[in-house]
Length: 472
Ligand code: ARG
Image (cartoon, rainbow, N blue to C red; front, side):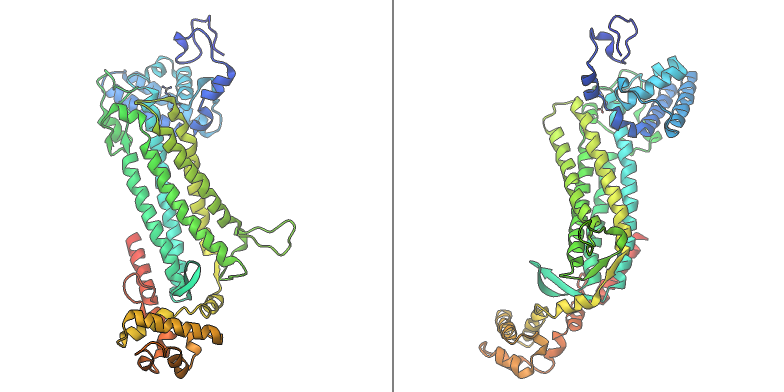
C-alpha cells in the first residue's frame, strides 16, 4: 500500500500524489491480471530498447549487462510460474520493471529512459499479435489441408445444391467444400495483409511526442523483426486500428466457419441425413437417450457472436478518443486476446472435425431425386436446340408442373409425356428428342459444368490441384 507520508512512494508514478487510490480504484485501473500474457513480448521489447540505449551511449555497457541478466532471471521465474504478479504494480510493464530493479538495482531504473508505457504497450501488443497471426496462418493451413483431402475424396459425390434452401441444381460435395476453401484462402490473405500493418514499431514515440535522447528506432525495429517504424509518434501510441483489423479478419473467418457449422448441423439432422460427425465432436442429452448433438459446430456458430462483439467493442473503444494515448486503450487487450484464443481453438478443432465427417452419399443422391434438380439442364437442352431461353424456361416449368401432378421426377417421364407436358409452348415439343434423357441425369448435369469454377468433377479436381500447388 502507498504510504502518503513516506519519501519512497510505492507506485512508479505516485510521487506527486497526496493520497493513495482506494482498493477498488486500484483493482479497477489495474491490467496486470490480463496483460501479463504479454510478459515475453514486454521483455523482448525491453531488451531491444536497452541494447539500443547502450549502443547510443545513453546507458552504460554494465547497465545493459545487468538488465540482460535480470531479464533472463525474470523470464525463468515467469516460465516456472514463480513470478509474483502484484496488483499494486498495476500492469505487466511496471511489475517486470520493479522486479528488475529489485534484482539489478540502478540499471533497472535506467531501463525506462527515453520511453513511456504508452509506446511500450503498443509495441508489446504488436509483438503479441504478430505471433498470434503467425499461429493462425499456420492453423488455417492445417484446416485447408484436411478440407482439400475430404473435398478430393468427394470430388464426384453428387448432392443437391440449394438456393433459398430449396433444391436448385446438382453439385458435388467436393465442390461445396471447396467453396469453404476459397473463403479460407481469402481469410488467410486478410490475416497476412493485416500482419503488414501490425509489424511496425511504435517504440521511440515515448509518451506522445517522441524523446529528446539520441535514440535509434531503426535499430530497435530490426532487433524486433519489425518491417519499419511508425512514422508519427502521436499516432503510434494512440491508434489501435491494427487490432481492429485483426478482429475484423477474425470476425469474417468465424462467420465463414459459422456458415459451415450451420450446414454441418443441418446435414446431420436426421431430416436431412447427408453426413454424420464423429462422436468425439458431439454430446448426448441428459434426458433423451437417443440424442447425438452436434455441439462443436453449434458452439462455433455461437462463439462467432463473441468475436463479432469484440470487433464492435474495439471500434467503440476507439471512436471517441482524442489524440494521443488515453487509458481507454487498456480495454483493448481482453477483446483482442479473447478473439485470438477463440479463433485459434476454433481452427484447431475444425481441422480435426472435418476429417471426421462421414459422408452419406446415398442420402445425398436420394435428395437429388426430389426437387427437379435437372430442370435447368432441360431448359438449356431446349435452348441448344434453338428455342429462346424464356420459352424454354416456360416449357420446363410446365413439365415440372406435370411431374408434380404425376408424382415423378423429370427423368421418369417418357418422351411422349415430356412432349405433351410442353405442348402449350410453340416449338418446344418437337425439339425434344431421345437424347434428352442424357442431360436429365445428375451425372450429365454435373459433367456439363466443366468451365473453371464449375462443379464438374474434373473441375473440382483441378481446383483442388490448384489449391495444393498454391500451398506448396
Ligand atoms: N496498462 C496500460 C495499457 O494497457 C499501459 C499504458 C499506461 N500508460 C499510462 N499513461 N497510464 O494501456
